[in-house]
Length: 318
Image (cartoon, rainbow, N blue to C red; front, side, top):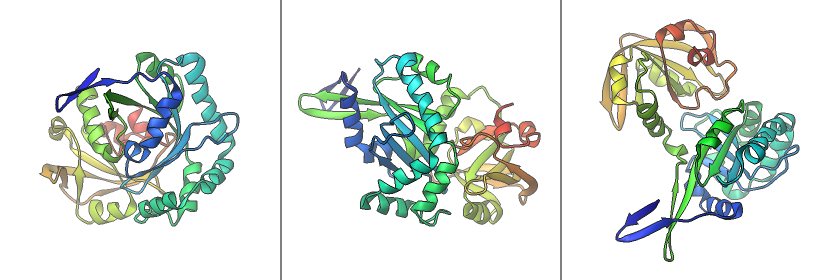
């Protein structure tokens, strides 16, 4: 693979050592992970394993997620090296949550503290301690960064029962010039979801959209304005959507209302969904077993699944 830019040809750099890949990721961490993420570059032992780092992602709608970060070369054997390492993460986390709370707290420098406090200003978290306590109550995700995503790696990770994201990081060189490429894109989650929709779900005929929000957005917009915006969705979905429900995230994690859709119109850089009437109140539908069920902040299902599910998790398992 090569990149051509302004008559310069950049060739892909082959990482021979994991330390080289890890150093490039860490040196560019602010850009790689994005404005709404805080990366802890530390190899602290948890149980019987040592992740390469820890990542906190605080979303625009006030939710937050914690990840173990593992940086790997694609040349490493999946089943003898990568999968066993990831399996240890989950066991170690479940048995050492209090220890991880203190590790994160002790690792905050002034720069991280300033960023965290800015990101949680409009959320339900009062300070960094409350954020960390909330994070360790949930399941942890695993973020695997590799120089090349191969089929055998995806297949191996599918055998693990946990939330794992696999992303690529590559370096290209032209003489003494360097360019980096990554699929990591935490700051533009809706655009990533739209891309996945177009490639992966085009045959589905879902008629119900579930959107994630905090309580303030739910009360002010969903209930107060009888609409929802700005929604990033593939154009082909518009004619099918007949219902919309609001999933209220931290600290509630439930659905209490849905609405019938009147129309979907262009709005800013996405769409606005207008309701036919005021939202309809439901008996509370809890999140269910899947902590990460609304990690894509927009999800689709059928009205039949929506009305016949005891939990939000069930809506997407049928």
